[in-house]
Length: 118
Length: 159
Image 1 (spheres, chains in turn blue, yellow):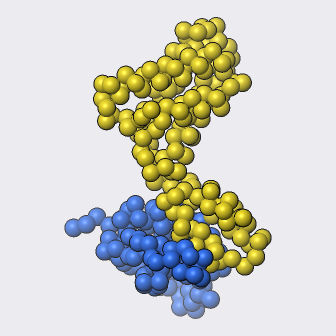
Image 2 (image 1 turned 60 degrees about the vertical axis):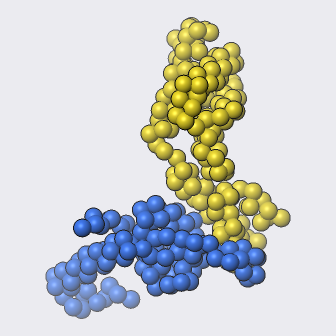
Image 3 (image 1 turned 180 degrees about the horizontal axis):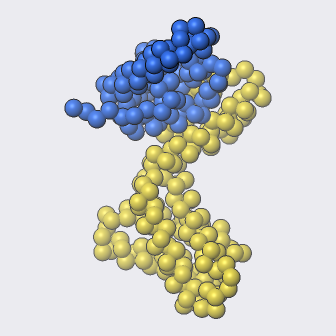
């Protein structure tokens, strides 16, 4: 049994963004998706890079360089992919978040808990 | 021009993708400058964290501090009795460690040149007497040479 890695909130957002974007997960697209997910709190490109490096060190994601494209000034993209360990860690985090949500939902009632989601 | 400057600042291991991402996000010079200011330092810090080994760094900095202390003992013992001498003696090892960290990030080599030790000593001119600095740098260089001769693969230092 693999010991799951615990994830911080920003790491959860970055992994969710990579999972959502699939083959198109690279710096700018991940930052845009994380910004969407964390709205109204913005996400900077620098913090996304730092988190991607950390996730790669933990072997939760892997990366490869794509071919250079003209819309990027002839520069390559570093594309990220979720690894099995990353999927497992994200799944554990999602299950925990769901459990928290259900507990809050039960304790505070449907109307009040739904008011949190905008 | 600005891109050339940013390219110079970025470590080679991530230069292409970061420049490409910044290019793709370009909306104007002010936005580009803000992106660079908030991105490049974090990228460099992240690469330093990835490439550095805290245990080795601690051994290196402690060894250098002890060598500078020994240099002060040999050259001018009265200096060690001055108020902030022990604190000031930490400046050259700290500067050298900073240079080592940058060296690790900006080169593909894991080997660290003794030149960094000399430059670290230069950063401390003014805070530590120059005779102590020179003696410290020479002692570290001699120490490195001895270690290299005894254990060629131990430190991975060269030159």
